[in-house]
Length: 68
Image (cartoon, rainbow, N blue to C red):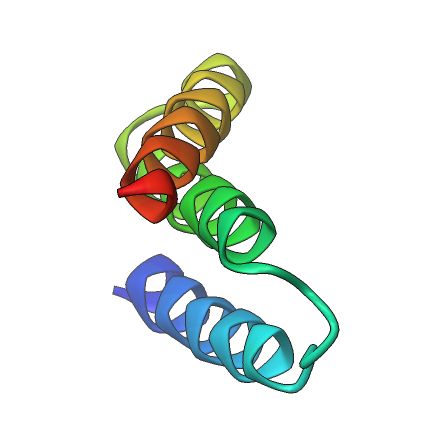
């Protein structure tokens, strides 16, 4: 339970931080946001390897979604 609360807090802080970056284009925000969310999900599901894979997959999906 403690991990889920911490993950949610980190996610909220990250999204607020991304919102303040007005000079970033949509693709960059999508990529970074996807990496953050993917890393958090990977961390909640597994260990270090899952975190890295989740961040990579999230970055790719966020980048592709922002291009549309």
